[in-house]
Amino acid sequence: MDFESNSWIGERLCYYPRLLGGVMLTAALLGVSTSYLTGISAPTLPHFLPNLSIFHKKKRGKKRIRVYMDGCFDLMHYGHANAIRQAKELGDELIVGVVSDEEIVANKGPPVLCMEERLALISGLKWVDEVIANAPYAITEDFMNRLFMEHKIDYIIHGDDPCLLPDGTDAYALAKKAGRYKQIKRTEGVSSTDIVGRILSSAKSISQDCSNSSLPSKDDNVNHVHAEEKMSKIDHISSFLPTSRRIVQFSNGKGPGPNARVVYIDGAFDLFHAGHVEILRSARQLGDFLLVGVYTDETISEHRGHQYPLMNLHERSLSVLACRYVDEVIIGAPWEVTHDMVTTFNISVVVHGTVSERNSSTGEEHDPYAVPKNMGIFRVIESPKDITTTSVAQRIIANHEMYVKRNTKKEASEKKYYAEKQYISGD
Image (cartoon, rainbow, N blue to C red):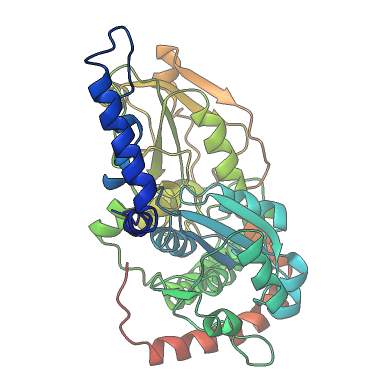
């Protein structure tokens, strides 16, 4: 609790003794005179004294700490989300800078996602208060002063992994020198480089999935290709170590009210992208509470091909939980929406977007939404964007050689980071 200084009172009592004495004498005389002069009222003593409330504790509005974090946020994943979450815990308001396409090209190579898509992903995170588009890759003196003066930033945040410019210098050197830098812990087991590696290892099947509208062939040649890719994917198996604490950190921790309109939407939510953010926002607008079902890895592989999912169940669930429009997630939701599900979660409406991945591995005709349709609670909503996981992956595959070259360089630096990694306290 802050207290207002009252030292000035003593100074003025010493400085104006005659004035105060005169006031008190006058008040006393007036008080006496009222006993003789009826009908004449005199002001009471406290009216003349300084406001005694200055002796009481006075609450001051606590200054809100504003922190800044930036990044490319290309191929947005739960590691990015966790970094944003940690940054928000270091202040009251989090401002996120999204590096421009041009700056990414100059420092890392062409981004997979354009600025519009990356802005949608960052704006969709529950911990973000403001977004600065087209931020520079390096914290220059001019930009740092702009952050401090215009945006009232108190601290600049970055992870414990090094961020080096092409010339080998630290991109956050000036912020550190100014004493306005704070560090957070990098999330283990994931990076954009790692995800690109997963996509490249599944490139042949994804390309076939894009070009072939019929069910996959079962000939020996195709099976041989699939076997090779499964072996290749071993090198890119997720090393994420999910914990119950991490799930709690991402969760809202609140259930729906007794009369809440619960909206349910399900899907793979693989390689979480701007299309996912926008359809979740549209779904949330239909009710008071958005419940999202995230399919198991086995369900996705069965219905969409062995090359999927690119991200495992826990990785995908955290990406969905980080979205500001999501209230709760069913981790490992069934393919079919059952009557028991509707009753258990008090679901008012089940929605599905107009854009989704093609189911390529099964020939079944059973409708997974038959129950909600029969109950009259199913609704198709227009997907705001036509982006899919496959279309995002195809951008990388279309520039296969460039991304292989870039990833080779990045993977080397990441291996060095993990080899030299030391324990850092944090969340």
